[in-house]
Image (cartoon, rainbow, N blue to C red; front, side, top):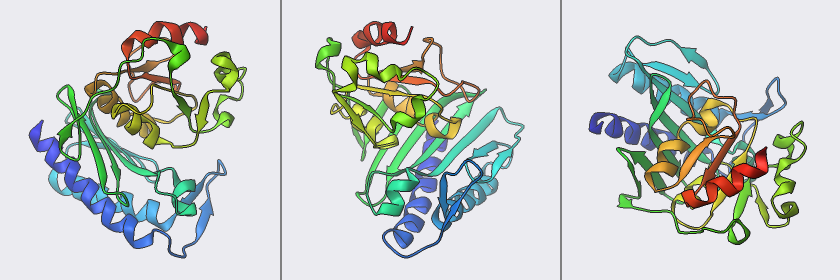
Length: 250
């Protein structure tokens, strides 16, 4: 695993250099078919990361947000989101991140969240999570009524009867943050993140980070997340919160 961790850190280093080059600078924004924005930074970062993986691990698969899937032959797949939180990046807000995951037989075993502007990096692997090289843990929170809760946007819950409203009517919810909410959960500042309609590159890197810090992250049916999961995810810092939160999703 150490070899993979070293490569993942190198990928994050390359991504950060490119992100800092474009951050708060003028650049064009293009709308994809789903109307989500993409920038030159998204594409340049993913191209650079793919090139390094191809150089060092040519037998591995790659799944990236911008350039799709390359099938592998090793059983390992790298899952890349060059800029998770592109809207924040466009706004010049430092709550975006580069997400790097390594999956073994479709299950995430290594995850990186890199915030290159604040120079913050979370790495989850081998059952532990580090923040800038130091081991971090989630905080205790056994009562859902005391939990700090987050999601990226209420729009992702369309078609799910605004399920977040079942959690105290949504009054205690913090919106925005993308991957950064999961990073803060791992550091013990957020207790629960609930999301829907995610793609594998949105969540694969987050699983080893959350669980390595002592939390629990699964799909809404309490099944282990894989790159084939349906994109409905729940993460809790204290596993004691799981049953209380999951009961709201029925």
